Length: 78
Image 1 (tube, rainbow, N blue to C red):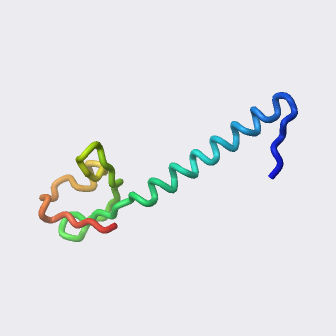
Image 2: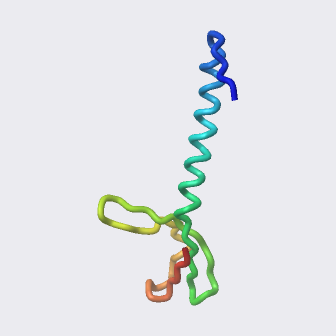
């Protein structure tokens, strides 16, 4: 790949690549942290994202994925 250094061209071309690679990096990071969730005694399926804040680990998901299912009846697969 050759960098375009013509005045003004690099800024536009470089910004496009920066945004493209940033989005690909975010997509890759999220994909590695996706968690499958089984709820409602196996009748419900959903997904979440594993995250960590300081020393706390947790899974972020939509309320409807786990709503009405007691914690002991939730299943997770990574």
